[in-house]
Length: 561
Image (cartoon, rainbow, N blue to C red; front, side):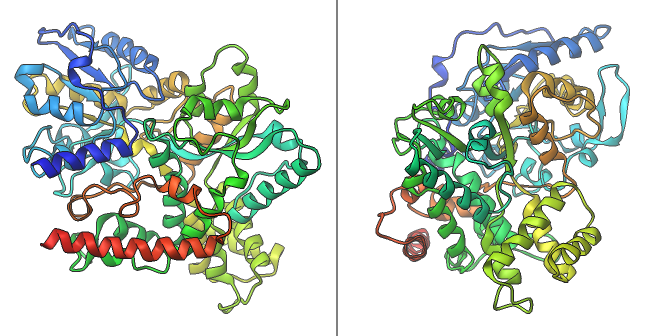
């Protein structure tokens, strides 16, 4: 039990949730009315206004029935272990009917979770096999399962196959870019590959050497307390892993193999997921991105807060320390806030998916393949395919365009590999789940609320008030005044979208004690950032690769002892 609790705490830290005790919350007015559901809300980057707007719509729709939606004081602590502990205390004691939370995975509330006890209701028949409910109480023609991407559905389920979680936000992570500052360097086209990104970084350094303005290519958050070290940079690292080889990516975070019938089986020697040559180019690109020479002053400081790093992106190039790129997500706009001068500055901010790792182009089209292309040509082909994917072009058109413009006749399988890679998006929304606690007396009303949150009506509310996208959106007419929001929406609605997240599964959790990246490298971003300047990216990658294998072997040995 103690080990399971420590794993849960480790996972919580990985998601960047502050571990404030449940007892520190303000006292809320819990309703005992049998038609009122009490709702806990995790006050994350999306804020809280969206839920109050939804509350009004829900109560208006069910005015005749008298159903009420009682939102208890939203707090940053309404996530992770404190909420799991509260669920364990039992519904009769806490009287919470719906948790709209974060940093809790379905496995943790299953019968094999932290307390070896089922803490939540199974939502499959209660919610997912039913239809979405609109604000006027009409229902969708398809089920909620059909509305949810097949890539996201597994993240609502425990390894047992039972559905406990309801994902409530389709958050996409990528690169936030200040295009006004970037244009000052003559760059108007945003990068689609890592080589293109690094070329821009080097151009900025070159221009800065000629005429310093204290503008840097990139900034990032390494604050462990705010989750930057464990999540924001992993948005890129894990995206590159999945782009390079999605099958080994899934095995890496499960330590399981998938059978023809779709079931997963624990590996006999799970440490071997680290002994995979695919991770070397990923680590090399990661070291390149985290090179201290690119970073804004203070980016390597683990005490630098998230809002300070975001301010470096927002600030104009006026001789003060600032940056152009940052790994972040579609929640950036909401966290920065639509107030004061930010309203104007945010029109300079754009959002793009994590650039595709250039090593993939070399693997598919390089000198050792039948295409025999140079590294530069590989990147040209890779970039063009990415551009066409972003435009939702069909595979046949992508292949014909590459041949017409680049003179390269691609096999369908190779073109598809790039298409799949470009569709990969690190979806932080996977971590934002809602749960109905076990034994909830008003679970039917709570289920109605979740079904309404799966409607297009709710999706428009979420877009307007949270600047985010619902994972159930099928036909959203509303657009934002900010290009940033519309770009994030386009990524999530792209026909090739493939949401990924390095969710740690039960078996891997037990073997590695909750480690979410490389064994012993919980603060992977800081490890990457502190590479000795004299060491090449490839050499550093090789060293970390070998170290990770040895640590994984040792963890497996200790697990078996």
